[in-house]
Image 1 (tube, helix red, strand yellow):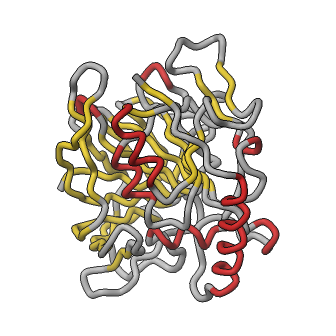
Image 2 (cartoon, rainbow, N blue to C red; image 1 turned 45 degrees about the vertical axis):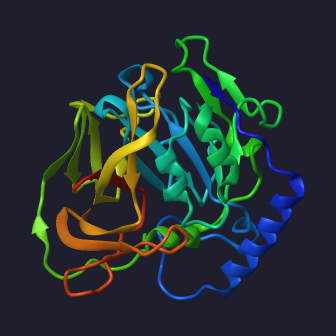
Amino acid sequence: MERSARARHGALGVVIAVVLALLAGACSGGSSPGPSESPAESSGPLLAVKIDNAPQARPQTGLNAADVVYAEQVEAGLSRLMALYATKLPDSVGPVRSARESDLELLAQFQDPTLVFSGAQSKLLPLIDAAPLRPVTPGDAPSGAFVRDPERTAPHNLYVRPPRVQDRTAGAKALERAGLRGGPAPDGGERVAERTVRFPSSRFTFTWSADQGRWLIAMDGRPATEPDGTPVTAATVVVQRVEIKESQFQDFMGNNSPLTVTVGSGDAEVLRDGRAHAGEWQRRSERDTTTFTTPDGDPLNVASGPVWVMLVAR
């Protein structure tokens, strides 16, 4: 059964915000994905939201507003999304679903982020409480932060209102902790019109649109859109090949929850500007920054705009 993780004391959020503001002021060099912010807009924690990716959950809300979207493997070979909001807080995001152990390792590279989710396997809750993040669930969220869409069926109808969860953004530089530094593309690269990335039981197809300067996204063969019909797009797609193994947790049906390991190293591919660039990724420890480089060791930068990171088995 899913239960809410305990809320953190409000004073902790103030301390985190002050520390992040000081760190942001000390950082320099390189451009970042997304628009630039003034110091007043860049003093809050990074906001991460777990988003349902079952067919019944589509079309999702708030994907185009995300600075980064991670796709990770869950039970039965399906996929789930985690959207990061660093430069803006959209009015609504969802459907919101439960957290996984993989999320804790992935988010540990950021500075005490906020994680919005609908609950978690009961044995995972102590690990969430011990993790360096602020958990927000329907059971401990501020009043009015979560709503259900009566036109959808549970559990695919829960939405969060990010401005009611926090009132400040982290700023684009927070994304550099994940190795997502904006800048020019490396020389060369293979011209690519379309690329399909597969999980055991789901797939994502990215088709380059020169007119939009974006990759059009399809999920399981159908174009991904926002509820108003606007296509979901990415400026950059990062295919990060990782180890995926069994975790110590199961879902309510007894299926093992896969653990996506994002500490270590491996191959990567960056799709941007209609080209594919081969590369490598490395992250030495949970609190360390991820880096993406070319085979020659040069930085593998992302284009300005939304980034999708596909965490697939090597």
